[in-house]
Length: 226
Image (cartoon, rainbow, N blue to C red; front, side, top):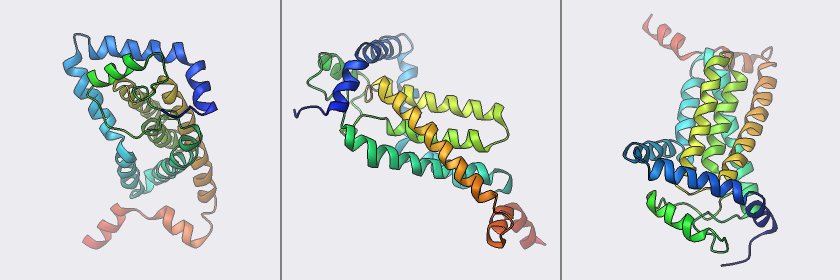
């Protein structure tokens, strides 16, 4: 195995106890616990929703069809794109942190590999930090949180992003510190997206932008029926 980058080594050293304790807890509590027959399909389903960010992209596009939810939908979609640029294009290649079950230089390699096998040996890429699933989930939910007026619903959305991170820890394809990284990047991406969409909405005095903001699929359907 090639030598670790300085950033990957720092993450491994700094979060060693934190990462091991949480991964061990998830393995013992959910994978080996009495409710494992429930948690295994549950966490696999949650992580499936985060594949390539498609679930969040579809939801954001649907929201963009309606005037009332368009702003939040646009913020979600843009946030996913910004998060992907930060995570997949910039941070992951630079840090190049191996997955827990791939890091042969780690003292916990054998344990992590066994936990990964016990959780179903999910196939993933080589780069671990930050978690792409968590980034896309948190970016989408943060974009929604910042752009939505219904904060009591938005808080629930943020909890779903955390749940996405938990699913990645359960499968042992990420260190918990990867999840924290994804949460931070996702929130930043959501905030950037919200500010840009807010700027766009402030230009509604312009004809093209006003038409885009005011358009609603429900009104279009009503017009066709009448």
